[in-house]
Image (cartoon, rainbow, N blue to C red):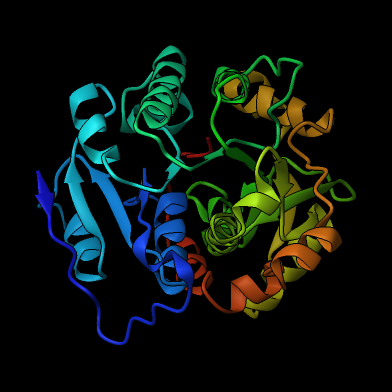
Length: 321
């Protein structure tokens, strides 16, 4: 099912990409939504694969000027239809790390990621951009929803198709998930007070990916780790207290919790061994992609609604993934 494009008022088709469309997967989510928005802002026609074109989020995408195509990762025919005639693809898949939201296994994620890449190559896609994770690499992490992305990366590199892989740091938005304690005047996370971890705003992921599509020859064949800021447990306490205008005490998740919750415990280990802490060269990224949002600027700007919601969230289980 395809819903025609509706041009939004004032859309400025400023570049030579105006006649080339990009298929964005996950456009109703954080990363895909940011990519779709950034592509539209730079003049790219955008097509989005959605499961339910009548959902609130899908209708909002249509109103913003996206072409919607109904489909599902498990339906190859719908993927083939969505890929017909597009110039580029932004590929992201649901993963087991998103809990019960999608009911997807690590094996499902790898299968979906490989299928999208295969079908894109068969459709003659000119530029394929896959978003992975900063923990990906040749050595396994022991966490399925990270290692699945490493498998997909390897699969894509073997194909005869122009591609770029981005490896984002943890999203700033994820720092505002329920269960972190902000409503009680505390904040818990994985970092030790003096331990550094990189983060990125999804807005900047979108902007970076849009730049990659607009400069395909420059970025083809590259794997780029991306982040916008480096924070510590101590800096989080300062930033959150300043934004809340009251003291917010920072502490690392207690050892008892990390021992009881195997998933959180393994995430903490990946921060301690550096795999999730990040190694992006932020200064070099800003030379290539322009200024990136620092955490304080994100809190004061696009992150403020999420921060205010977290301050008033009340009791909730930790929802990290």
